[in-house]
Each structure stands twice: as structure tokens, then as C-alpha cells.
Length: 265
Image (tube, rainbow, N blue to C red):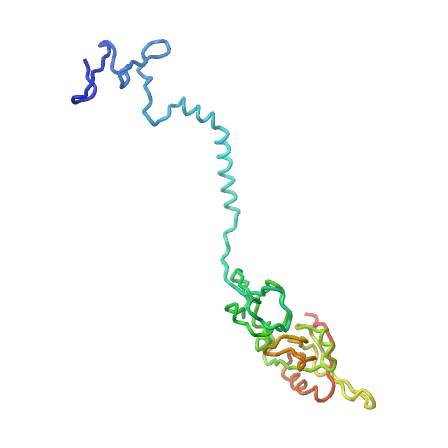
């Protein structure tokens, strides 16, 4: 009688002596085919491994899930290829709200924003408090990046031709200053006479000079305060020869300006 196993717990396996060992399973049960005959080839698959019959059944039951997965894989790869890589950004500083020209910057007027490195302009402040207490030379829209060229001071002449000077002028009609904004070009006109018995003669002191700053009635104090003393004051960028003619011109007569367009090209 054949013995299966070893040691004291060995058990005897009974099988007919005239049948080969391959016709019996490990438990000693005889394997038979459908016609009742023993089939040595039909052995139970090892535990943990699916037979072809079970695998085919599982695939048939889950064919829709498999089809959906196979569809999602190329779709996901396509989306990944078409999605642009996140761009590198740096911190810059912009207006936190719409700010009028002449406003003195206070905490909360400037906020930090993330922008691509190539969009940060030269002269952007290094912190939110860098320009606190300084006065704006031009109005700013919310989100507009701030630079030193928009602040009253040396930055006003940024981009001007070498040798340019910022010349303050007091206009004879303070109300007319409301009609001009920084960046516009004006001709500065000097008119002599008193307007009554003495005939006045007008001459142009400077042509097409850009306006850098205008007084704002009731503005907050700052480096160039916009108060009653500065009412009617305009600051223009002038070349050296123009600056010599404009300096002290308000003591020679009345100053007026004429809005002009930039020359073509």
C-alpha cells in the first residue's frame, strides 16, 4: 500500500494496483472524464491560479468594464500630452484697487501677485511697503503692476531722453488742469499783458512736451502735495533748452497749455 507523507502522521492512500498514479489526485480521489473513464490530463489547477475556463468566464462578465478601461487609458494619455506644463511664476506688486493720480499710497493699496518672470517690469517695488507714503503720478487700475515711473520723484523721467528735466509750471487757469492727464503732450504758451489796456503777445515756449504730473485738489500730502498751494500746477518733461525758457516763465506773464497730438512715427 502506498504511503503519502512521512513521519508519524503519514497516511495511507488506497488505489487499485492496476491504475497508474497519474489517475489520482493528491487527496487520493480518482480523476474521471465525462464518459466515466479516468483522464490523467484533467488535474486540478494549482491553488491561486485560474483555469482557462474560469478566466474566460471572468472576462465575459466584465467585458464592459475592461472596454471602458481600455478607452480611458489612451484618453488620459492624450489629455496629459495636451495639458501645458505649469509655468514658473514670481512675485510682483500691483495696485490692490483702482487708484487715482495724486493718491498717497497707504497700507493695503499695493498687493502681491504671481506673474511669469518676463512680465515683471523694471522698477517694480521689492515689497508691498516699498512705496508707502509716496504719491502716484498717474492713475492705476486694479491689478496693474506698479513701477517707480508711476511715483512722483526721479522715476517720473524714466524713459525720457537724456538731459531731460522735470519742470513745474503754474497755469493761469487752474480749472484747465482738470482737462489734462499725465502722458498727454502740450504746447506751453506764454501770454504777456494784463488783458485790459495792455495788449498781450503770445509765444510758444515749448512744443509737444509730455505731462508728468498734475495737481489734484484735495489730495493727500506727499512728496509733491496736491493742496491749495499747488492748485494749477503742472509738471512737464522738457529738454535742456526748453527747461531754460520755461524756468520762471510764470513770473513773465500768464501760462497756458494747448493739447497736441504726437507726431506720426
